[in-house]
Length: 494
Image (cartoon, rainbow, N blue to C red; front, side):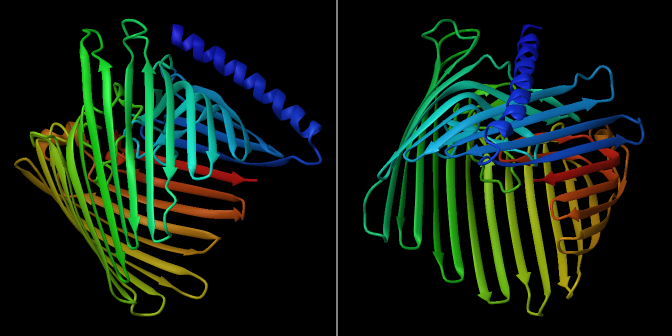
């Protein structure tokens, strides 16, 4: 209740501040201020239960000389009385005048590749990991020094609802230094170092804080690029006390020639992930292209390999072999991808794809799940319109049960005007012991229209069903509930 009151008071303050600034800013700077922004409003209607929810996000940006004021107004209202609505105002004011940049308010930042700190926004996946505080950056010659403080907030969408995952009382202090050494153009060497301190309400005393620190080296020589990052976690075991330590290692390399690209990465995480139940303040990278992690930096070892080869101007091949498991190899995921793209005929592009994944204890209650999914897609561009068709077939083995899912879709559209898509997805059977997880539906027809009303307004209408399931992005996963109904999204920019 205390946290809810704090959030409510903060929201009221933000609403008042935002309204005042919105009214007086154009009056003060009417001749020289630059105004831009956008608005996205969404409406969902669940046909079976007639539940619904409305969501609106308004972004505003005012710029005057070296000062920029940004505001975000968010509102989400479900129809069920037992679901609390979520509304808040985020704002920041930024002063940018090289070599100084200062920002106060709500902001996002990543140190290195995220092993120490990674507070980010993913609007497509609907996860908002922000910091409310201040950040200052100083650039001089080839050096960039950043210092920050603030309170983190993690908003996540799951089970068809927005939820604030943390209590917003934790505090972050951090500093990051990036240096580019002056070397000949063909050689590049960047060195970075960072330190982040986390204070939590659950800490025993002021000395029992958690800290993460580390550094990175990035080296380039002609067509080769290599990156290495190390992170160390020193903390206190919550509730029981005692020292808690962890380490994180990440190495990636790329080698690019004419028509050929090679990439490799390897990582090892041992108690490096930090945050709370369902959220992290640092989000270590995953090698899995589908975005899955095992336990988000607590006990993971993985690698990823990729090769991209253009045999001719019209034929391209891509292969991926990626793995992420616990150090004891009791849980994990293996991902194998082969992709071929052909456009030998003018205006016609054909893409063939084979994906194989093996998941061990990733999608409970299934202990082992193997999927083999071949697919093909063809796109033809006429002078005025384009036509796209695709088909995929997924052979699934879940422990001792076997079934398959297949889907086909066809789209027709005109660039900067409209796109209309019909999609039909079907599952041939559902093992009895999996109906509680997958539901009883076996088919999901769907129609979608994306219409550019003007060059600044787009309306998307989706009618039909979505099967749901495990979806991931950047190592963050959630289980989406099946959906049957109508979705409307109107996006405007100005």
